Image (cartoon, rainbow, N blue to C red):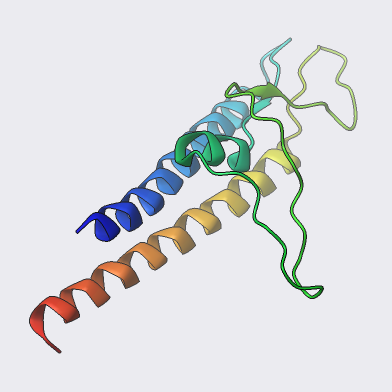
Length: 128
């Protein structure tokens, strides 16, 4: 039973963080024309490590892809613009839209993994 709880908690945490990030990015997009508004974001891996209390993935084979070691801050950071705006706004609409689309895709993928786990558990319970 503890394993089921861990799996559901793992995916639930990922969904919550993805949802929080979508809210922040949506706020950035909504304030694209607000003078002196500073675009914010969160680092998914930092937040996920904080919630799940896990560290970096160990690399045990030369074909594995290494992961960066991120510092866990727990706070939203301000995104640096590529091109500075004259009114002090740091929102770059194309960057925000791309980040929103990417995060939404990852949210949907996490949701599909969670649905797959639930389907497998239900099949096991039914004895299928």
